[in-house]
Length: 490
Image 1: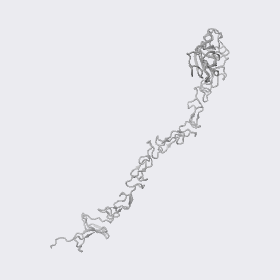
Image 2 (image 1 turned 60 degrees about the vertical axis):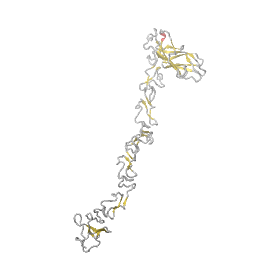
Image 3 (image 1 turned 120 degrees about the horizontal axis):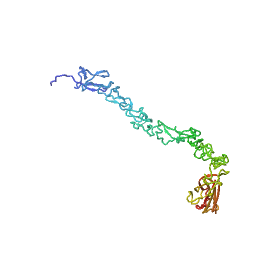
Image 4 (image 1 turned 90 degrees about the horizontal axis):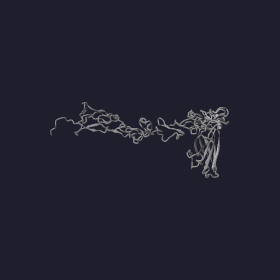
């Protein structure tokens, strides 16, 4: 057999050893010749490639791609290796998606050894990769950093988001977070529920508490809340500032003003510190003030009496209710008074004496009451109830009268022994007397002399029942065709 010409050297095949190194073997199956030296493999630059062994760097063979083979175990990450021993290529457990621990390298340098890495767990109060928060660990976030004003931040159960249900925004009219109230929302709280007695509760500027600065406590001698006063504290107010003209302002138990001691001059009521008011003079009259006649009045301040219309008969001055005084006839004569001729004189009572005058038809009669006169009957047609009245105006030739005679013809007298029907008689608002109708009466005749003359010539006559007849005791009426009144000059 003829042998082929050429190189009789063999190309060694690479075999991986147990220690991670490689060795060559004869592919011919004949083994090494023993006298031949292995040729170093060249790297991509044409230079020999070496690898580390237990005996130091050694030359490595060239792999099938034509580059040097990486040596796993030399703590240097080389081409094709993920890691190599302590060289982890900058990676750790956390970058690999774990919670923590010590990352290692697989023995073949083809991957990482994560056996000692700890797995991230939601609920362990530690924020790890993939978690927004975990339990009480919010990564420094708060309600405020999330755009709220107050409250306590929480974490979602799956650690993927913040729970802001307990966060609040003051001013949004919603009570949330740590808020006790918000704007006009007080959750039913009032000044009273907070232990005060008055006032309007409000909300603090930060919504974290109720504002009770406008609430008040009645009884502490301090005006607060909605109080107008408190005990002796009247808040610098007086009867005058409250629109009255006199008196002493007080404070009620409810901390509201007591104006019962204040007076208003001009309301015809004696109140406050007033002595009188307009026509109201209390028990005082011209007579109690030392005069003989007249109508006592009140001065403009309600602090004293006005006696300008009171009179003293006999002083020669026509004053009070006097028509004349002595020889002072107030400029009148019989003729000026429409009483014809004659000599007018003055009586000792300071009323005119018409005896010297030629008075036609003296005295003067008028029908009263008549069907045309106004009246007020509470029940039925007979004036038996207190306050029932008949009233009418009669014009006389007398400028004043000093006496009135009444003639009442009684009709429908149903009064029993227990029934009495009494009426006041007044002229121009002045009560001059009264008459009473009893069981069986058919006519009433009464004459009333006046303390002073009543000026006319128009006279308003009024009969007013002063008290109701007792129940079951009957009633009586006036004959409106034949009943009369008589004027006597005064």
